[in-house]
Length: 276
Image 1 (cartoon, one colour):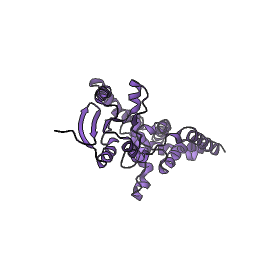
Image 2 (image 1 turned 90 degrees about the horizontal axis):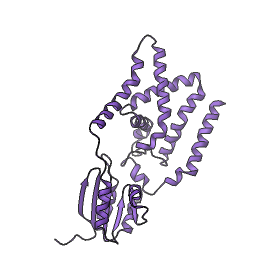
Image 3 (image 1 turned 90 degrees about the vertical axis):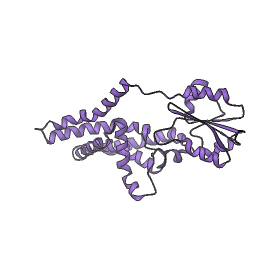
Image 4 (image 1 turned 45 degrees about the vertical axis):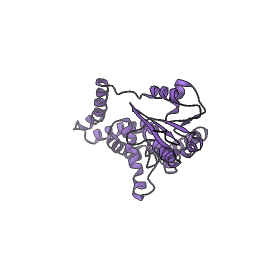
Protein backbone atom coordinates (compact mmCIF):
# COMPACT_ATOMS: atom_id res chain seq x y z
CA UNK A 1 0.00 0.00 0.00
CA UNK A 2 2.86 2.36 0.79
CA UNK A 3 4.51 1.64 -2.58
CA UNK A 4 1.23 2.28 -4.39
CA UNK A 5 0.74 5.49 -2.43
CA UNK A 6 4.22 6.75 -3.30
CA UNK A 7 3.72 5.95 -6.99
CA UNK A 8 0.30 7.59 -6.99
CA UNK A 9 1.63 10.72 -5.30
CA UNK A 10 4.45 10.97 -7.85
CA UNK A 11 1.98 10.61 -10.73
CA UNK A 12 -0.39 13.20 -9.26
CA UNK A 13 2.51 15.59 -8.67
CA UNK A 14 3.81 15.07 -12.21
CA UNK A 15 0.32 15.58 -13.64
CA UNK A 16 -0.08 18.79 -11.65
CA UNK A 17 3.24 20.15 -12.85
CA UNK A 18 2.32 19.27 -16.43
CA UNK A 19 -1.15 20.84 -16.29
CA UNK A 20 -0.17 24.02 -14.44
CA UNK A 21 3.25 24.70 -15.93
CA UNK A 22 5.11 22.32 -18.22
CA UNK A 23 2.55 22.12 -21.03
CA UNK A 24 2.78 25.88 -21.49
CA UNK A 25 6.49 25.57 -22.28
CA UNK A 26 5.81 23.70 -25.52
CA UNK A 27 6.66 25.66 -28.67
CA UNK A 28 6.61 24.92 -32.38
CA UNK A 29 10.34 24.38 -32.79
CA UNK A 30 10.87 22.19 -29.72
CA UNK A 31 11.23 18.92 -31.63
CA UNK A 32 13.71 20.47 -34.09
CA UNK A 33 15.79 22.00 -31.30
CA UNK A 34 15.70 19.13 -28.80
CA UNK A 35 15.39 16.13 -31.15
CA UNK A 36 18.02 13.56 -32.06
CA UNK A 37 19.54 15.95 -34.64
CA UNK A 38 19.63 18.84 -32.16
CA UNK A 39 20.42 18.73 -28.45
CA UNK A 40 19.45 15.06 -28.17
CA UNK A 41 16.68 15.42 -25.60
CA UNK A 42 14.32 13.02 -27.39
CA UNK A 43 15.01 9.43 -28.51
CA UNK A 44 16.06 8.72 -32.09
CA UNK A 45 12.99 7.17 -33.71
CA UNK A 46 14.85 6.16 -36.86
CA UNK A 47 16.45 3.19 -35.09
CA UNK A 48 14.67 0.51 -32.98
CA UNK A 49 17.93 -0.10 -31.12
CA UNK A 50 18.21 3.60 -30.27
CA UNK A 51 14.66 3.54 -28.89
CA UNK A 52 15.51 0.55 -26.69
CA UNK A 53 18.77 2.07 -25.48
CA UNK A 54 17.26 5.48 -24.76
CA UNK A 55 16.71 4.81 -21.00
CA UNK A 56 20.39 3.86 -20.63
CA UNK A 57 21.63 6.76 -22.74
CA UNK A 58 19.51 9.35 -20.95
CA UNK A 59 20.39 7.85 -17.54
CA UNK A 60 24.10 8.22 -18.29
CA UNK A 61 23.45 11.80 -19.46
CA UNK A 62 21.80 12.61 -16.12
CA UNK A 63 24.81 11.30 -14.22
CA UNK A 64 27.28 13.09 -16.49
CA UNK A 65 25.48 16.40 -16.02
CA UNK A 66 25.78 16.24 -12.24
CA UNK A 67 29.19 14.58 -12.01
CA UNK A 68 31.48 14.83 -15.00
CA UNK A 69 31.86 11.52 -16.83
CA UNK A 70 30.44 9.68 -13.84
CA UNK A 71 27.14 8.72 -15.46
CA UNK A 72 27.89 5.04 -16.09
CA UNK A 73 29.21 4.46 -12.56
CA UNK A 74 26.28 6.30 -10.97
CA UNK A 75 23.78 4.35 -13.05
CA UNK A 76 25.31 1.01 -12.03
CA UNK A 77 25.37 2.01 -8.35
CA UNK A 78 21.75 3.16 -8.57
CA UNK A 79 20.73 -0.17 -10.14
CA UNK A 80 22.40 -2.00 -7.24
CA UNK A 81 20.48 0.21 -4.83
CA UNK A 82 17.10 -0.36 -6.51
CA UNK A 83 17.75 -4.11 -6.55
CA UNK A 84 18.38 -4.06 -2.81
CA UNK A 85 15.27 -2.01 -2.02
CA UNK A 86 13.12 -4.14 -4.32
CA UNK A 87 13.86 -7.04 -1.94
CA UNK A 88 13.87 -5.22 1.39
CA UNK A 89 11.67 -2.12 1.00
CA UNK A 90 9.63 -1.99 -2.24
CA UNK A 91 8.13 1.41 -1.36
CA UNK A 92 11.57 3.03 -1.45
CA UNK A 93 12.34 1.28 -4.74
CA UNK A 94 9.14 2.68 -6.21
CA UNK A 95 10.01 6.13 -4.84
CA UNK A 96 13.37 6.01 -6.62
CA UNK A 97 12.25 4.70 -10.00
CA UNK A 98 8.86 6.43 -10.50
CA UNK A 99 10.18 9.96 -11.31
CA UNK A 100 12.68 8.73 -13.95
CA UNK A 101 10.04 6.44 -15.44
CA UNK A 102 7.64 9.38 -15.78
CA UNK A 103 10.43 11.46 -17.32
CA UNK A 104 11.21 8.69 -19.81
CA UNK A 105 7.54 8.42 -20.74
CA UNK A 106 7.38 12.18 -21.33
CA UNK A 107 10.50 12.04 -23.54
CA UNK A 108 9.15 9.10 -25.56
CA UNK A 109 5.95 11.11 -26.11
CA UNK A 110 8.14 14.10 -27.13
CA UNK A 111 6.59 16.26 -24.43
CA UNK A 112 9.69 16.87 -22.28
CA UNK A 113 13.33 16.59 -23.40
CA UNK A 114 16.03 14.90 -21.32
CA UNK A 115 19.29 16.67 -22.10
CA UNK A 116 21.57 19.13 -20.38
CA UNK A 117 19.90 21.21 -17.64
CA UNK A 118 16.44 19.72 -18.19
CA UNK A 119 17.55 16.61 -16.25
CA UNK A 120 18.53 18.47 -13.07
CA UNK A 121 15.43 17.38 -11.15
CA UNK A 122 16.49 13.72 -11.50
CA UNK A 123 19.91 14.22 -9.89
CA UNK A 124 18.94 14.04 -6.19
CA UNK A 125 17.29 10.64 -6.61
CA UNK A 126 20.22 9.33 -8.64
CA UNK A 127 22.77 10.53 -6.09
CA UNK A 128 20.82 9.07 -3.15
CA UNK A 129 20.46 5.74 -4.94
CA UNK A 130 24.15 5.70 -5.86
CA UNK A 131 25.12 6.42 -2.24
CA UNK A 132 23.04 3.46 -1.07
CA UNK A 133 24.68 1.40 -3.83
CA UNK A 134 28.11 2.22 -2.39
CA UNK A 135 26.87 1.12 1.03
CA UNK A 136 25.53 -2.10 -0.45
CA UNK A 137 28.90 -2.90 -2.02
CA UNK A 138 30.60 -2.20 1.30
CA UNK A 139 28.15 -4.57 2.99
CA UNK A 140 28.81 -7.31 0.45
CA UNK A 141 32.60 -6.93 0.80
CA UNK A 142 33.08 -5.95 4.47
CA UNK A 143 36.80 -6.74 4.44
CA UNK A 144 37.59 -4.49 1.47
CA UNK A 145 38.07 -0.73 1.40
CA UNK A 146 37.66 -0.21 -2.36
CA UNK A 147 33.87 0.51 -2.25
CA UNK A 148 34.56 3.53 -0.03
CA UNK A 149 36.96 4.94 -2.64
CA UNK A 150 34.20 5.15 -5.27
CA UNK A 151 32.64 8.48 -4.12
CA UNK A 152 36.03 10.20 -4.13
CA UNK A 153 36.86 8.77 -7.55
CA UNK A 154 33.56 10.10 -8.93
CA UNK A 155 34.34 13.57 -7.63
CA UNK A 156 37.91 13.59 -8.92
CA UNK A 157 37.10 14.82 -12.44
CA UNK A 158 34.86 17.57 -11.02
CA UNK A 159 37.67 18.72 -8.74
CA UNK A 160 40.14 18.72 -11.63
CA UNK A 161 37.77 20.78 -13.78
CA UNK A 162 37.13 23.19 -10.90
CA UNK A 163 40.89 23.62 -10.45
CA UNK A 164 41.35 24.37 -14.15
CA UNK A 165 38.63 27.02 -14.04
CA UNK A 166 40.16 28.60 -10.94
CA UNK A 167 43.57 28.73 -12.63
CA UNK A 168 42.22 29.98 -15.97
CA UNK A 169 38.64 31.24 -15.73
CA UNK A 170 36.66 30.67 -18.94
CA UNK A 171 35.77 33.73 -20.98
CA UNK A 172 32.21 34.99 -20.61
CA UNK A 173 30.12 35.29 -23.78
CA UNK A 174 30.44 38.74 -25.33
CA UNK A 175 26.67 39.11 -25.62
CA UNK A 176 26.39 42.72 -24.52
CA UNK A 177 28.96 44.03 -26.99
CA UNK A 178 27.19 42.09 -29.76
CA UNK A 179 23.85 43.61 -28.75
CA UNK A 180 25.36 47.11 -28.72
CA UNK A 181 26.81 46.60 -32.19
CA UNK A 182 23.43 45.51 -33.55
CA UNK A 183 21.63 48.44 -31.90
CA UNK A 184 24.11 50.86 -33.48
CA UNK A 185 23.76 49.45 -37.01
CA UNK A 186 20.21 48.06 -37.05
CA UNK A 187 17.61 49.98 -39.04
CA UNK A 188 14.02 50.30 -37.78
CA UNK A 189 12.69 47.76 -40.28
CA UNK A 190 15.44 45.18 -39.69
CA UNK A 191 14.53 41.91 -37.98
CA UNK A 192 16.48 40.80 -34.90
CA UNK A 193 16.71 37.15 -33.80
CA UNK A 194 18.50 36.21 -30.57
CA UNK A 195 19.04 32.63 -29.42
CA UNK A 196 18.83 33.67 -25.74
CA UNK A 197 16.44 36.62 -25.91
CA UNK A 198 16.02 36.69 -22.12
CA UNK A 199 19.62 37.97 -21.85
CA UNK A 200 18.74 40.84 -24.20
CA UNK A 201 15.71 41.66 -22.03
CA UNK A 202 17.91 41.93 -18.95
CA UNK A 203 19.83 44.79 -20.58
CA UNK A 204 17.14 46.54 -22.63
CA UNK A 205 13.76 45.32 -21.37
CA UNK A 206 11.07 43.48 -23.29
CA UNK A 207 10.95 44.10 -27.03
CA UNK A 208 8.09 42.53 -28.98
CA UNK A 209 9.99 42.97 -32.26
CA UNK A 210 12.78 40.59 -31.16
CA UNK A 211 12.48 36.96 -32.25
CA UNK A 212 13.66 34.48 -29.62
CA UNK A 213 15.42 31.17 -30.16
CA UNK A 214 12.10 29.44 -29.49
CA UNK A 215 10.49 31.15 -32.49
CA UNK A 216 9.86 28.66 -35.28
CA UNK A 217 12.15 29.38 -38.29
CA UNK A 218 9.20 29.72 -40.69
CA UNK A 219 7.72 32.43 -38.45
CA UNK A 220 11.02 34.32 -38.49
CA UNK A 221 11.13 34.16 -42.29
CA UNK A 222 7.57 35.50 -42.49
CA UNK A 223 8.47 38.41 -40.20
CA UNK A 224 11.83 39.10 -41.88
CA UNK A 225 12.47 42.55 -43.27
CA UNK A 226 15.08 43.64 -45.76
CA UNK A 227 17.83 42.74 -43.28
CA UNK A 228 17.94 40.06 -40.56
CA UNK A 229 20.37 40.12 -37.63
CA UNK A 230 21.17 36.92 -35.74
CA UNK A 231 22.93 36.85 -32.37
CA UNK A 232 23.61 33.24 -31.44
CA UNK A 233 25.26 31.58 -28.44
CA UNK A 234 26.03 28.18 -29.99
CA UNK A 235 26.54 25.06 -27.94
CA UNK A 236 29.47 22.75 -28.58
CA UNK A 237 28.81 21.04 -31.91
CA UNK A 238 25.33 22.52 -32.37
CA UNK A 239 23.70 25.86 -33.09
CA UNK A 240 19.96 26.53 -33.22
CA UNK A 241 20.69 29.31 -35.71
CA UNK A 242 21.79 26.80 -38.38
CA UNK A 243 18.29 25.75 -39.56
CA UNK A 244 17.16 29.38 -39.47
CA UNK A 245 20.06 30.49 -41.67
CA UNK A 246 19.21 27.71 -44.14
CA UNK A 247 15.56 28.83 -44.22
CA UNK A 248 16.52 32.46 -44.82
CA UNK A 249 18.97 31.55 -47.58
CA UNK A 250 16.29 29.44 -49.25
CA UNK A 251 14.03 32.51 -49.10
CA UNK A 252 16.62 34.60 -50.99
CA UNK A 253 18.67 36.12 -48.19
CA UNK A 254 22.45 36.36 -48.48
CA UNK A 255 24.91 36.44 -45.61
CA UNK A 256 26.68 39.81 -45.70
CA UNK A 257 28.41 39.87 -42.33
CA UNK A 258 29.63 37.39 -39.73
CA UNK A 259 31.47 38.15 -36.50
CA UNK A 260 32.77 35.52 -34.11
CA UNK A 261 33.17 36.83 -30.57
CA UNK A 262 33.79 34.91 -27.32
CA UNK A 263 30.81 32.60 -26.98
CA UNK A 264 28.78 34.54 -29.57
CA UNK A 265 28.29 34.47 -33.34
CA UNK A 266 26.77 37.57 -34.96
CA UNK A 267 25.35 37.16 -38.47
CA UNK A 268 23.66 39.64 -40.79
CA UNK A 269 21.65 38.50 -43.81
CA UNK A 270 20.12 40.79 -46.44
CA UNK A 271 17.53 40.10 -49.06
CA UNK A 272 19.85 41.43 -51.74
CA UNK A 273 23.64 41.75 -51.31
CA UNK A 274 24.99 45.30 -51.05
CA UNK A 275 26.77 46.73 -54.10
CA UNK A 276 30.50 46.13 -54.27
